[in-house]
Amino acid sequence: MDSLIRRAVDDLAASEYAIALTGAGMSTESGIPDFRGPSGIWTTNRKAEAQAYRRYELFLNDARTYWEEMLGMRGTCGMFYEEIEKAAPNAGHHALAELEALGVLKCVITQNIDGLHRKAGSKRVLEYHGSVHALRCISCRSRHARDDVCLDVLPPRCICGAALKYDVVHFNEAIPSDVMKESEAEVLRCDLMIICGTSAVVHPFASLPGLARSRPYRSLPNSGIPGHEKGVTIIEVNDEPTPLTHGGVSDCFIRGKTGDLLPAIVEEAKRARSALATEHDPLLRD
Ligand code: APR
Image (cartoon, rainbow, N blue to C red):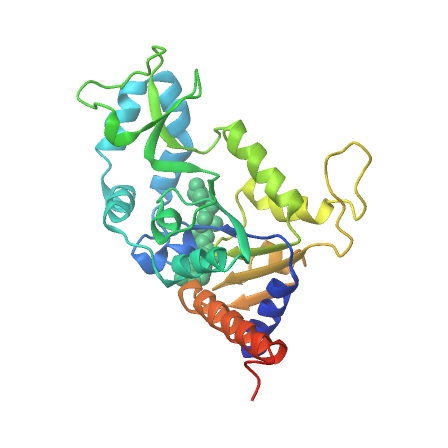
């Protein structure tokens, strides 16, 4: 394990533009269940999963019932939303925020709707599947802080008149174009991607590592995509292998809890950095 941590730190130190892609596994140590892990919401409640697959269509056809269902959530889905309200960032979230503060990590692209990366202090966060703390209008694409919208009358309406929904991307709903565009630009720019706590089975998010791999080694004329001679390094941190592991998309798979492994990577990065400073700074040398 230590050699894998050291390898990840060496890769991070050598990177010019490292980004993180995260999933629900980041938040299980904050008490928020994941979806497909051994005790995940979908693993333990197939009915809830089937209901989730119908939710976007329900919003389109009957926004009032959509809201009554979302607000009246009971069972595992209700618990999921309740846990989000109570949850605090864990050591894994703080570790990614620290890597950003150290100037190593440039962006987090997360599937999580819980807002815990921002709560931990990460500044550049793209919420690929949206946020439970906001509402969105699919007509004029405006977003509204959930606490600023009165829910006494359902469905809540946008100033443009259309019904508002949670700014959460439901199954069969398109990723909002602004987030999709920004995320793809980050993926095409990165030369290191650390993928944490995701089963990597839900597309289009799960296609982002492949998109990074597809980036040309040389900048295509007038493409606006800078070439990147050394290719992209993909590191996976997860407590079980995923299709990215089995498919050879990731270069390195570090098995374990994000709440343990990411802080270990940060500690090793800081140790290596201070060792380097000592080596190169005659004042610090004995
Ligand atoms: N540390 C490391 N890995 C973990 C931890 C942990 N503490 N806890 C869980 N995991 C792993 C699980 O083993 C699993 O492989 O994280 C992964 C979580 O996978 P999913 O539950 O499928 O979550 P995610 O990949 O984010 O799901 C993607 O599916 O239902 C939709 O919209 C939902 O955004 C979600 C999307």
